Amino acid sequence: MKLPAITEFMNWSWDKIKPYYDELASREVTAATVEEWLSDWSLLSDYIHETASRLHVATTVDTTDKEAEERFNRFIEEVMPPARKADQRLKEKLLASGLTPKGFEIPLRNMKAEAELFREENLPLMVEEQKLRNEYNRVVGAQTVEWRYKEYTISQLRPFLQSPDRELREEVWRLMLGRQVKDRGPLTEIWDALLDLRQQIAANAGKPDYRAYIWQAYTRFDYTPDDCKAFHKAIEEVVVPAAAQILEKRRQRLGVQTLRPWDLEVDPEGRPPLRPFQTVEELQEKTDAIFHHVDPQLGDYYHIMREEHLLDLENRKGKAPGGYCTAFPVSKRPFIFMNAVGVHDDVQTMLHESGHAFHDFEMFNNPDLRYSQQRDIPMEFAEVASMSMELLAAPYLTKDYGGFYTPAEAARARIEHLERSILFWPYMAVVDAFQHWVYEHPEEAHDPAICDGVWGNLWRRFMPVVDWSGLEDFMVSGWMRKLHIFQYPFYYIEYGLSQLGAVQVWANSLKDQAAAVKAYRRALSLGYTVPLPELYATAGAKFAMDAATLRTAVDLMMKTIEELESLAKE
Image (tube, rainbow, N blue to C red):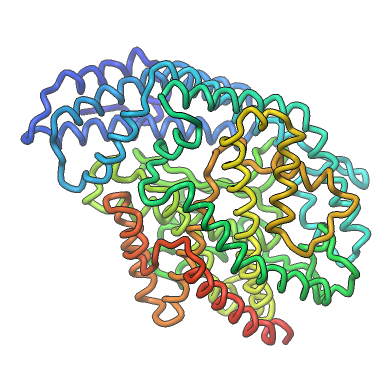
């Protein structure tokens, strides 16, 4: 199959694309022809994927670009629905053949699950859901405030939360949250519409609720909703006490009677905030050096991204919030988007998203992954790639390796990362447990006040020490500020599972760094050709949700924090 340059294909209408799908549907699929047929289908799928990715990127780098928004909406309205329908025909054709091409066992299993869910009447609903996601981006991306005669995005205010001036921190925190809650009205409208759409999609697919639908859509064969709830309990048992210990130590060091929400990002020793870089170019140069120390090939991958302008890193007005890595499979390249403002969080985001990019490179460079379906990696392992990289790169943050910090500053940064990783697990449990409740009680979830109550109860269960008295309205509405709840339902447990896997990869690196990185890269190169537990095992980790595995990880993290504290004071 011959297709034009991707830049030309991006301008094609469905009428020009359709004949390629029709030709694939007309071919006979036999043991002798199936590999060529799959390769051609895969190429066409890659073109669709890259077009969608590039058009979506254009809407996020500038949310005010109406032409980009129109091009993306036109694509998801006019091309994606018939393309999904055509893909369904090809899936059914392959499944009917009874063939299992080499290396296609897992994709075939997933394809069966996806084919079972497919309903043509859901295609326009999925288009509407994507539009609502874009509307969420537009609303949140437009949030700015005037402070001290200057306009700031919410992200640009975050560095002020590191100020040693507690009154200033409180002022900025209240300004940020006050601006965010002003959008409660439009976000409630988006939420209502999303709930209705998702329930209808599930009903159309013959599922009892949206959770059952999404479990199959995400091809979650290796764990259940009950396993997630058991993971929540393990976190409550093992991690919440450790988190309380970390926060109580912070309170004591700050010398405050109670720890308030604006006290969580300031250095507890009164040291000035870490300012790892002044410019985005500096961020790129130093990250490049760090990756070359982790592994020369990974460093080369990152250098390619710099050279080919596959990084959009700086924060600016009108840019969508957050950070992500997406893939351009025809070009065999990843793309990283983030909002850097010069704080250590930006370094962590850069390391994290680069882990995703390295995953893409390793898959693109594996000749055994001939088909796009083999690269459709499970999110539970995709985040192992990114979170492991944060930990594997940590020893090279110092200027001795071309990085950002003195040894004392690097120790501070590592302590902050490990503490935040521990504090993350309880927050992850709040987000995941909230979503289970939402889709177990969809009618009640339409009422923001009930959602507030549920979120508040979960917050009090998992989030210790911090004093929210007088700030309850801000606390209980936190679910509205969580992008994943609106944009990517049930996509959050993956972070908790992956962090547990990543700590195990890091633990291996403490014994033999080269061997740990080799196993990590080998696992990334497998795509999704083996089951999830085997992906973890290849990386040197156990896929687990139990208290014992969690305790081993937390003990190592707490021990390392203790060891780094003396170095951080030098």
